[in-house]
Amino acid sequence: MKIITYGTFDLIHVGHIHLLRRAKGMGGHLTVGISTDEFNQEKRKQAYHSFEHRKLILESIRYVDFVIPEYSWEQKVADIQKYNIDIFVMGDDWKGKFDYLQDYCDVVYLPRTNGISSTTIKQNVFRKNPYEL
View (tube, rainbow, N blue to C red):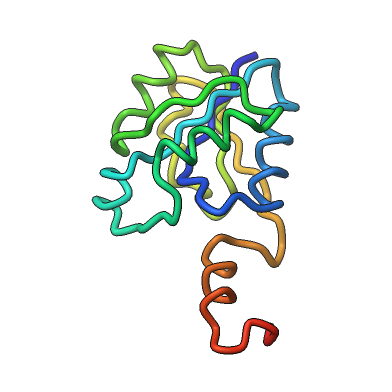
């Protein structure tokens, strides 16, 4: 079975690791699409790490077999077909948004890890008093 997931994967945290571990556990091969810097600009999302650094970090995680660039929202169908994907996985905060991909593969939304997100981490880092949580 081949699995694919997508994300920015900036400021890698335990929630990302849980998602990648659970996705990998669904099959034998996990491909991860990561948003390019240009695509992040289009989404009005700013990553701390560059695409190349995020790619290197993801390639170093044992659950990840292959990393591809994500240039646009529309490329998912082509990626699923190109890489012969069986299961598309995303966090359940995206529930319903990718159901259209069910024509090409199974779509699974995994529960997020409670209490952790890149946004929360960034907010905590930039507080005046970092010890206030």
